[in-house]
Length: 112
Length: 117
Image (tube, rainbow over all chains, first blue to last red; front, top):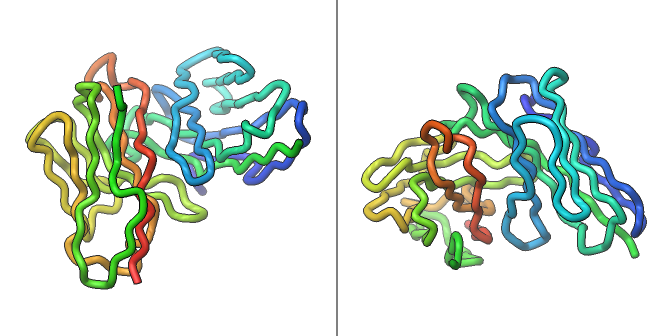
């Protein structure tokens, strides 16, 4: 079983819809990162969370440490939000040598 | 600030050829790393460095070498390319992995798409 599971793997929605991407993990963590990767492009850090909720523009990220679960929400989605969204956890110990374990990503397409 | 700069963006190699992927950052970050991204898999750590002169292996280091002679640069060398090394490579940096900086934000380059035939 992967230590970081994202759902859904693929999501297609219409412009304007409210989007939720989920990330569940099975290890103790010190922080969780949400990353965005546009087609053919680099990876951009959206949020880093260790508790509670963060908001940036139309993006909202929440984390529930007890349930080992995080969600990324996009309000009023737009075609430019089409990207792969990656969840990564920073473990207390283990994982990669830098303590990071990455999910496989959620491929989001927003149709106009 | 340019952030993290990776070159080249695309590269095609024949089996057995060698090459160096360049990575530079201008944020004075201590920590730099190389990942590879393959379809259906999460990013996997190849090598990392916690400061100039210090490097160590990650999860998938075989076939790759690194060096860190300056804070700014962290090149990745493919010694003898193999088709299994066909992948997208990302360089990343963050301020530090020490103490309160352990959870510093990650900064990624734009990636290098490598094909080995």
